[in-house]
Image 1 (cartoon, one colour):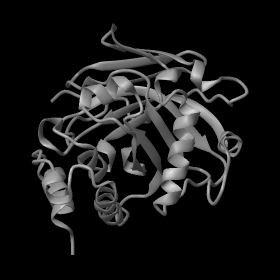
Image 2 (cartoon, one colour; image 1 turned 90 degrees about the vertical axis):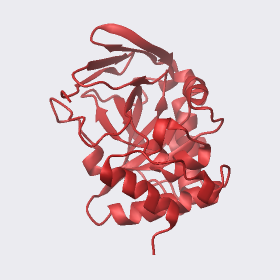
Image 3 (cartoon, helix red, strand yellow; image 1 turned 30 degrees about the vertical axis):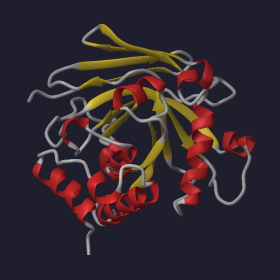
Image 4 (cartoon, one colour; image 1 turned 180 degrees about the vertical axis):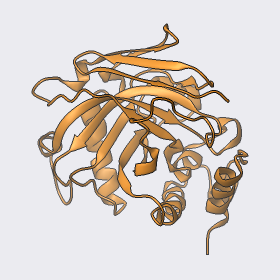
Length: 256
């Protein structure tokens, strides 16, 4: 039987109508309960979609300030969330989308059991520039940490840029990011804004996912977290981001 919190979020996604927060059902700070609600929805999604990785959320102080939370979280990425191959990303199906630029990692080894920071680094095959379209089923983005965790870390869609770099070629902490909308700069940031280093964020995720029984696996993609403030998505907009050492990533959104 689906829990009331999971059902509330599922109904919001199905109807396209944002719902009230779920913290009244699970508690605003109950992390374990929130991940349990997330797992319920993941199990249902796996009937029609394939897990391809994970995302880390709330790594940037700028984004934490925007949303009023003070710690990172993680969610699950599915194959139908990857819109990298689309020339135009449809806005239909998105409720309250916002977009941010970040470093993505593609893994070549599992991260299970005990591991060190060096093991985490060695598990990375390549890094890539990425755009994440975050979304919230909770009306007005009125979220506590429990609300966003339960809502699959406010996941939506993602775009991977074409460039691939090994960690011998680029140090993620040194990346400088600039994101534009229709040619106007709307967000700037750096690798250091992502928990101090995107690789630190990746290590945090590897341990958190392992401890929640869903360890990172070879072949998965990890979105390591925003490098700067996110901005609302509007129909027809063209978004481009340049990440020094990694290259560019861009996408266009369809009209309403």
